[in-house]
Image 1 (cartoon, rainbow, N blue to C red):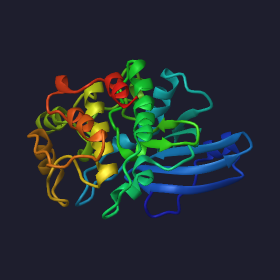
Image 2: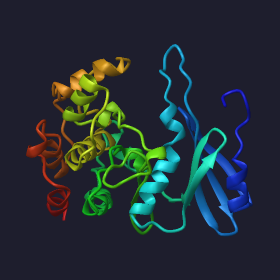
Image 3: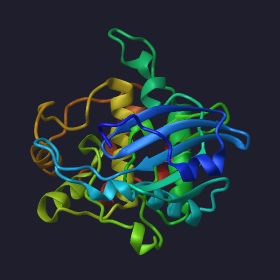
Length: 278
């Protein structure tokens, strides 16, 4: 895959008949394309297996992620999407979500000596998007700032490939092995360290959302560890609760602190977070 110019799979070209297409991401077993087609504007995700390198272990599950996300979208009742297989893995297409992500939108808050406070209405939009998922009995498993797209009418929560809450076809399923450590809850980090796997929960999503709001508002991670630390070292710091003494400005500060509570039972529910922001 790495030695050739990426192209959309033939099956996707036949389904969408694009009038314009742009590769926006190609890394770690995943390609994302922005596609204009007669039927609409789409994000196309194409998965392929990661081969082992000196710095990265083999990850064959990345080939399955787009189809797994497609199965999740089906369970959640989404419209105008499709998923399937191609010669190197799986694919899906779904409506393109227009707008900046949370981290991009709050960039002015992070500037040195900035007087711009994070907008609580933006935070509430993120909460409402996650609340919709939790209300259907699902946990996202990969909450991070880049997965909240702040659109002109509403906030969209994207990238559902790791979500848990309903049955996924066995051929497309794979164990949850953690996510970006910056946003992993302590219990997730501990489980991955001890067993190599974990189970996403709504309580862990709350922690991840708190960490996402904190880093977007301040530029600081919730937990302190060296930037270049190996993942097991990062996870050990998270599992041990090595919190930074940093707080988001304004009314968000105390709320985020409770969302980042070490024990899952001490964190508010997504509905309590929303009520605090309303």
